[in-house]
Amino acid sequence: MDPDAGVLVLAATPIGRVADAPPRLAEELATADVVAAEDTRRLKRLTTDLGVSVTGRVVSYFEGNESARTPVLLEALLAGERVLLVTDAGMPSVSDPGYRLVAAAVEHDVLVTAVPGPSAVLTALAVSGLPVDRFCFEGFLPRKAGERSRRLAALGKEERTMVFFEAPHRTEAALAAMADALGGDRPAAVCRELTKTHEEVRRGSLAELAAWAADGIRGEVTIVVAGAAPSAEVGSDPDSLRAAVADLEGEGVSRKEAIVEVARRAGVPKREVYNLVHGAPS
Image (tube, rainbow, N blue to C red; front, side, top):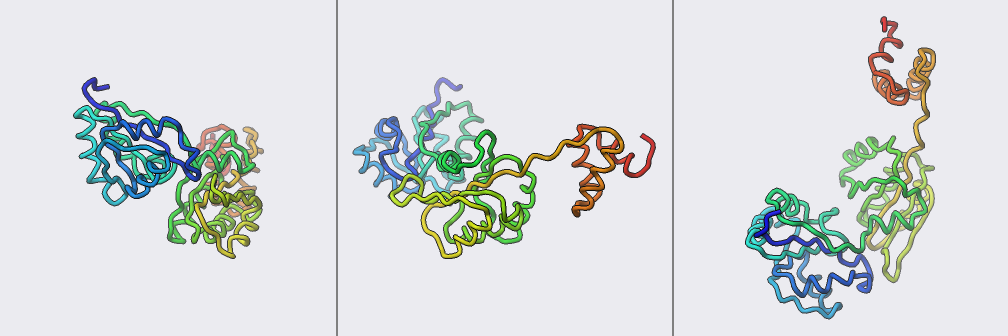
């Protein structure tokens, strides 16, 4: 790390109740040289609720000015200042502004640290009732139906539990698209208004949840979806390999894709499976 540079602090802010704020947040807000906030008005409400006075400079740092403001904040860091980054809720850079600044700080050997705290991703995962030993975060799905369908199709064989953010007015469409791509019987949970007064966790199949959301929902939404069932292992003997390819083709998978998948399951080279299926010498 550059000994003359400052420190970039990523601070988690409450996703619901102000009482969930980590104790260090108030200290960092009061002592930072620069506080970069996604929404300065929400920052003002937060500091009022916490009883904190910000003594450093306050600047806005949101999606619209992130590219232009990053060099300015980097300059402050290189000048030895302590820059605190907060977003509207949760941890900065997780589907929020912050990644560009972190990447720039790392590139210039500036120390980057964090004030850990509330996270909608981990909170929803923990209360969903779905497996938590392996998971992936997919952020927001594309708004356009075609792009959304392609993204979900690519996740069809994902075996880890998946976590998504979604806008309330698009939740029904997202759940319906998930049911089409992943199967209507796939277990899932819709977590709404986490840690707030009207917190709700609705569990069921994707089809059931899509029907429930048709009446309209409000508030911040996080969707947790169970992963696909683990792929069955395939024996590496020639008969098993040929049969596995034939089974996948019977399910509508192209021969090329079937060969790749069978090779992966059996742990053998793709060329070996290809030669067996096409009758070529091994």
